[in-house]
Amino acid sequence: MATTKLWKVKGRLDAPINYVINDDKTAFTDVIEYATHESKTVNVELISTINCLQDNPIQAMMNTKKLFKDNKEIICFHGYQSFHGYEIEPEVAHQIGVELANRLWGEKYEVVITTHIDTNNIHNHFVLNSTSMVDGKRFTNSKKDYHDMRTVSDELCNQHGLSIIEEKSYQSKSRNSYRNDISIRSKIKKDISEVIKKVFTTRQLFRELEGIGYEIKETNKNISLKHPEHKKFIRLSSLGDKYQIDEIQDYLSSRAPIRDDNTIYDRKQFDIDPYIHKYRNGNLTGLQKVYIRYQYMLGIVPKSTNRNIKYSKELRKAIRYMDTISDQTILLCRNNLNTFTDLKNHEELLNNELNLLLQNRQQYYNKIRRCNDNNLKDEMKSEAKKITPKIKSVRKQIKLCTGIEDRSIRMKEFELEIKSAQKSKGVKEYERN
Image: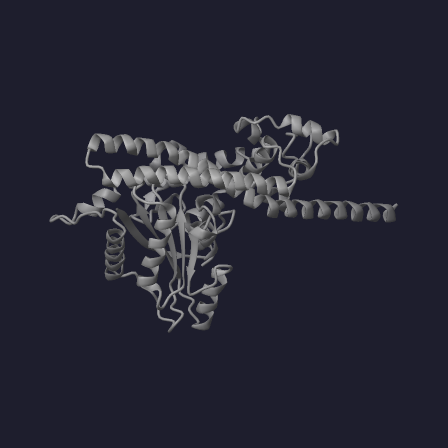
């Protein structure tokens, strides 16, 4: 069973594309960031493009717009195809998503397709350039377009042995009732709660929400939001006390990680102090030293209460990545990984573990499809469900491994920049004296 949705996006292209390929969600630039965010995809195998290079789909889409002098307000369309949790593997879901995009838009438009695995329901994201690369004509997302998307999705689900949402005689209830099990207000609250963890200003918050399809309307008295699946604006203040703009601003101003009473390692229940102690005594080596030194130079660890830490560009960037940086640090320390050889060996072990877990869960899925006993089927679903969190955990660790090498290089470059700046500053002070 798969549900589908496609909505227009105004503004910029990078947040939706980099959400649906890059480490960070920023603000067509905003839509593509949302769709390609690495924490929600397994690896590059779950990211595909049609009619544009995977390395830089944003530039390809912008070039098309420049070629046909298209400066219209709607810059792209962002959609999803969501599957029932027990029915499909990520790789198969991605294959279906690519087939769907090819059949619907492959002849005329540039598309990014990614598969997200961060929720109980595996789902595909699509970012579709609103300008045709063939003739410059614009995609409009008419009722027929949406009907075609739903129809082709159902056909592909049937071909792969998946269930579909059956049409009923009273059309007004079938799909709408399924999509609206959770109220629009609850969905808005959930989206705000997820986005607010990654931002530090209200401007960033609204920009991120626009990147995932929201429309924001501000007046002198109120701020209203329109959910991608809803036709009307809803006042932010009507969502509850903690969604008042003053409350949101107070929360954002007080939640900078480096000013918190507990470090991020306390919240992750990992004792970082022994490694800081080893670093200070010169007993830390390799990748562990690189990671601890980087955070030490930024003032993130150890937690400093005596220094007035300036929010430099590098520090603000590090804070946004801090959750990933701390997870990578914990992985290195907990598994005693000091060299890239250690890292590769550990990653190989994780891949083997992942393959075994996937095979085990697939065996349950196969038995579920063949089973006619509902009680036994429920038992097997329960067992399969127990494996899924383990798979997510191992995939997360694999992703951390693949990101360590690139990040450690950037950390070393930052250290050299700091040393160079300090040396230059010392020379200037000497000259003045």
